[in-house]
Length: 308
Image 1 (cartoon, rainbow, N blue to C red):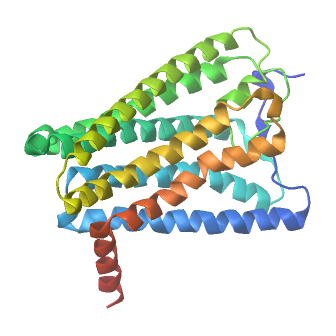
Image 2 (cartoon, rainbow, N blue to C red; image 1 turned 30 degrees about the horizontal axis):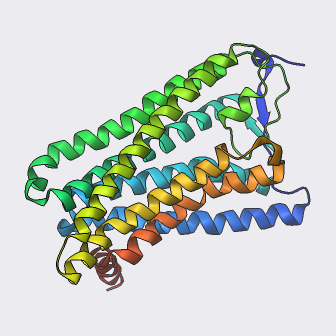
């Protein structure tokens, strides 16, 4: 038995026990990480360099790619390092930092997806006031609010989690440091305080979800009233990538946190955690690139320019 003052490191859940499977995990995650790095970097550079893409929608997309790239770097790189060097250890300070950045980046991403649904709502349902309601200053303020909300949420949860005394060992049933698994190590009834904070976060998340759903109900009603088929197709092309990203983000997160406890096993938890922490940051650039002709043209233009 130990307490939090004597813990100098945590032990993360390993993907495999044999050396061959550990190396397979390393190379698999390396390929996924490089794909996410390439896709998100291309979107960031393309939007930053092409002045035709300096619009609210692409400004928010640039922020989304920054968050995706940061979040997958936070979880995957340490796991790859552990598999490569055959270890499970992460330092106490490293675990604190990982918890903070995981909560910060995923919270900021969800807030940003909510802001992006408002952007799509104004673009489709109130296009004449789009430039007024979503000017440069308003977009910067909304993006800053999304990042700020994630930061404050992470600061609160991280401080409260690591303030609790830990006496149930130092082994975590997760491949990265995550609050629910750290709470399992607590020997204090004060963990109910963190559980209360988590419930408040759940209510905020649910409020954002309701906002997104209501926005898209209004959007689809407006699109279906457009008389021309070309106009409807253009409107759907603007909205469907964002809706697909939101659905992927929410469905993977819900499967991780809302699954019944009686079906929870270390192997299943590992698979589900990969789904919500690794898959969305990797697929988001592909989803936006496939459905957005303007972005595809700009990316190919950038690639052709760099080659020539």
